[in-house]
Amino acid sequence: MTRIVLTGLWICTITALSSYAVITWMPDLPKPKAEEYLEGLSYQKLRPLNIPIIAEGSVQGYILATIIFTAEAHLIKGAGVTPAPFVLDEAFRQIYADGDLDFRNLKKYDINKRLDEIKHRVNERLGSEIVKDVMVENFNFVTKKDIRS
Image (tube, rainbow, N blue to C red; front, side):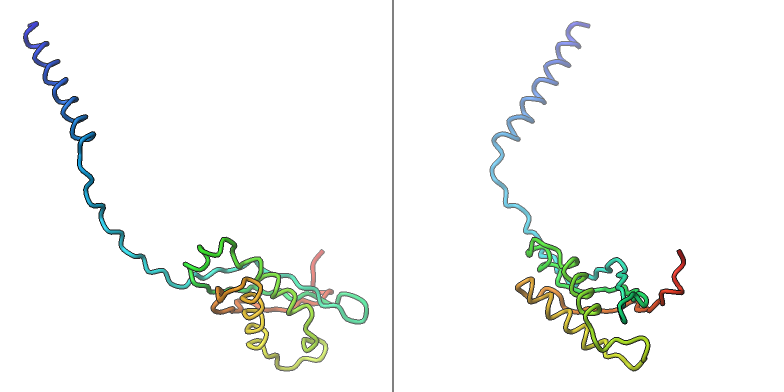
């Protein structure tokens, strides 16, 4: 019985020492080549914007807009800052300050011009061509009397 126990201990010791020796003295094996991951465009949907429309000294209503933008994924990672807050800020500024947007006198609105301007200004503020396209998912006007309290 003692002989079986000693043989078992001997086998466990030899196995543990040989495993340690292999790990310690293992030559540097060539690491597997990391495959380049092709990153494409990243789509980011922004939170809805509520932009007040002020005319005649009071709020006439609100524009509710949901903006989506696309950007190169590897540029977003390398930039260190996400362009989302810049797109939100620029969209708010562009729509709020737009003199052509008059809901009392409706006419066809050139939204493509406004979206291109948002993209251009955001890329200018970020210092590189990160944002590739700006799109509108939702663009509505709600009058002040239609708002539920």
